[in-house]
Length: 117
Image (cartoon, rainbow, N blue to C red):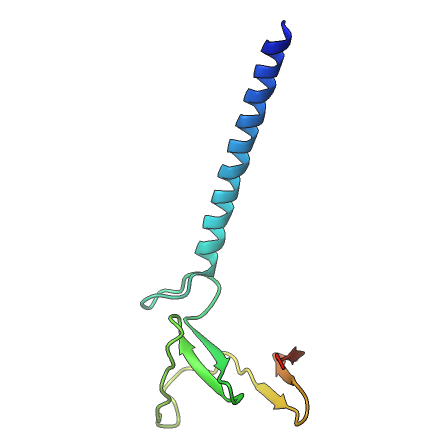
């Protein structure tokens, strides 16, 4: 085996390895993208519900849909016609005067969020 043949084989192996890595990265990205999708229609897909709670510039919570469009609150008649309560989650948001911090308590965990000055 000559020296140039060995270099050609090494170069071929390197190219094949790089192609394999790039294909693996693409497949991993597609899998992650599918996992992050929200629900559509009545079927649940992914691991997140099709809404989120965000905060406006004044620190007030705003519920948004999967396109980050604000949802309008509405009145409902109680009691809600259902079989049973599946879960109840609470959220506490605290802002401090003279501080650039927000404290969030969600699901029993406390988050201290620094805000830009």
